[in-house]
Length: 197
Image (cartoon, rainbow, N blue to C red):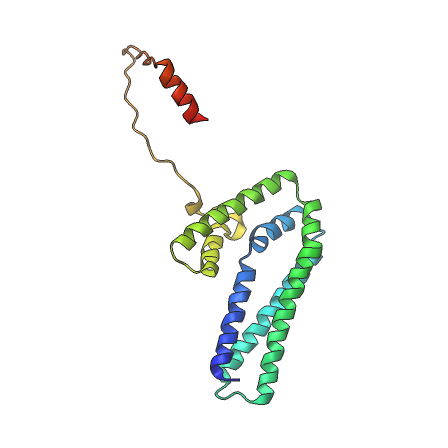
C-alpha cells in the first residue's frame, strides 16, 4: 500500500462520514425525537456511540497517515482494521436507524411536529438545490445548508427569514374621493379566470 493510496482512503472515508453526519435524519428527525420522548434516549445514545466509534477510527487512520513515511505489512493490517471498524460502525448505525429509530419516531412524534419536520426537509432541499446550482460539491452544499438551518438551541438563523420587499402604495388623503374600479369586459374577465386557474 502506498502513501497516496492511504491518503485516498482517508479522504473517501472522511467524505462518507461527512455525508452521513449531514443527513436530514441527523439534523431534523433525531432532534425532534429527542424533544418528543425520553424513550428514545437509550437508542440515541447507542447511535451516538456508533458514530463516535466511526469517527475515532477515521481519526486514528489520519494520525497514522501523518506518521507513515513508508507503509509496512503490519501497518497495512492496522489500516485495514481501522477501515473495517469505520465501515462496520456506520453500517450498524444505519441499520439501527432503519429498524428501530424510524418506528419509534412514527409512534412518538405528534402530527403537527411531522408537518414542521416536513417543512424543514423541503426548505433543506430547496437550499441544497440552490447550493448545487452555485457549483458547490453535494457534500459541501449539504453542510452549508445544514449550518444555515440547524443552529444550536433551535435558534433561527437570520438568513432563514425572508423579508418581503416594500411596495410603493399611493398616498391617499382623507378628503379624496374613492376611485371607482375600472370595468372589465366579459372577454377580459373570462381570460383572467383562465389565467388564475
